[in-house]
Length: 525
Image (tube, rainbow, N blue to C red; front, top):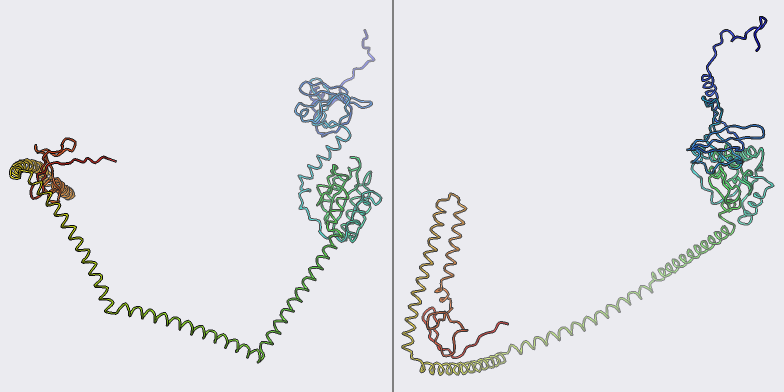
């Protein structure tokens, strides 16, 4: 065991220095690392364990770094991280105080290479869209283009396709080539310089910026932020034509129009082709010829009208005109004379017929004929009436001879008196009841102070008297009705009487006794 000698001296903390605790040291270090901001670290996943969160390591040829990816971020990834993947981890450095362990806490993860670049382009697109770079009003491409500026490589295939397309569709369009690099280092600066030169020249009606097809990395300059902003700020309407149909660059969103290929952009610029211009000129020529022909035809018609009016204004034409009017008047006169003659002849015939009908001899003869017809009809009626009464007299005479008239009349008078006595008693009894009712109503009316009740009672009294008078059988007899009874004084029932029975018919001024010779019961239909 070593012991200290007198010559050994103990090392002490310098004066004025106050040591910190481990916890304070780790907290300060953690704050410093947090203030360093977000770091993008590229490496290969060496280890990976998932306990809700993903704990993994990334490494390169000489170093290893521990990383943590929280569960919610892990679920939002579009791929599943696994050992051997080359990735770019976006996050902040952190020290776990309890163990003093350093790790990179990831807030996002991308696959290295194209995946990372595509994510950067997507973030840039969102940024520019929020700033309103893509929201500027898109200008329409002019229908008739005299000069077009092409911003691309003068040696590329794109410029060749544009020139060939424009020459085949409309060789009258002037083409200005603004040469620029379209890939590699310096491409963005070259493209911006060519775009500014085209705007400063102010010679072009429309600009085309783009290139032919290529890899994703080859098209990256057209998604650069500086170039995209320059395209959006272009004074001249601009078409973005980058790559082929599936390829998309950010200049497509900033330009006024996007074309899928440079050839399509050339088609848009030459929407009015040379054939369209020739056809339009041909149509204009035809319309002009038709207008001239129509004007000549109208002038010729006006000339003929003027010549006709000049000829009609001469004395010979006036004579012809008066002759025509004279012939017309002569024709109207002849027609009027014939119509008047016919009308007068018809009127004369009507007067002659009326005169014949008004002749006294004719009227007397008609009256004699009418009197003779009336006398004949009267004689026939008298003869018929005499025959009818003669038959009726014979019938009644025969009937009276068979009936003991005096005894029947005496018996009928007894029955009639009995009937009248019963009828009078019934009527008096009914009248007494009605009078009692009336007196009661009058008493009620006298005890009431309401004028309305009095009027109602009066109306009711009148109604009762009317009903009473209507029920009086004598009133029915006075109206021509009769009342028929059998020998017992009961009303006749056709179902009970028989041939040979005697019946009595009461009228308003007497009674009739009859003997039944026939019975006819009418059946209901």
